[in-house]
Length: 266
Image (cartoon, rainbow, N blue to C red; front, side, top):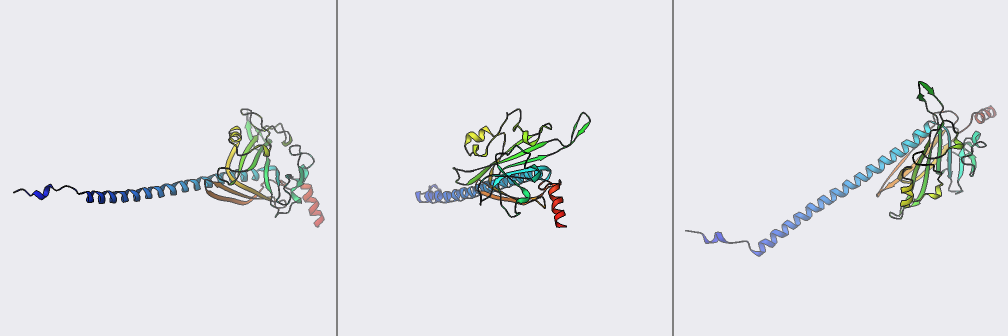
């Protein structure tokens, strides 16, 4: 005998309850996936800004460590007017930054905080050409720190541009910035901003736009540069700081000044 009750279908109430349970499960899954996506993006942005920070700091650190001459153009909070800080023996010879008031490194207090706009580093390398070893090539790398207020994020940022020159026949005062493939470039820090046109125009020189601020302290006697670089990108922040010591002698203070000082101390 057939059981008539087996032909009973799903009621509207049961269907509504099933849909409600399914909807709650879907909401839970979506929320879980959304949280994982947010965590992934945050982690990715954090790793990205840390990588940029380490690369930027490492580049400046390596350049300073192998420097023969360093010229730092920047300003202090107390003054606000850009000056050219360099070794005393270079003050009367360099033409690169002649428009700036020049101050010797050994006239600075080691606690004086400088906000750099340019960091010009001259160094030498060994190069082999036709079985000849050429030393003391005049190589120059310049870091441009261009500060601006990012309209999209409302955060203070600082684009960093780099130019290089490898011509051994010229000195630091005669450098023509840029590479032959791109064209000569003689930028002023005020000419560079956050506009897409500037970034596109100078993209071959753009090192990073993730920097938010950079400060430098110089201890001329110890020949050290205290770098403090703050980075900000996509909501993530990171700070790279440390003291960099020049490997070469008399980078921040010339030999004559040091000998005179030692003589006076005796």
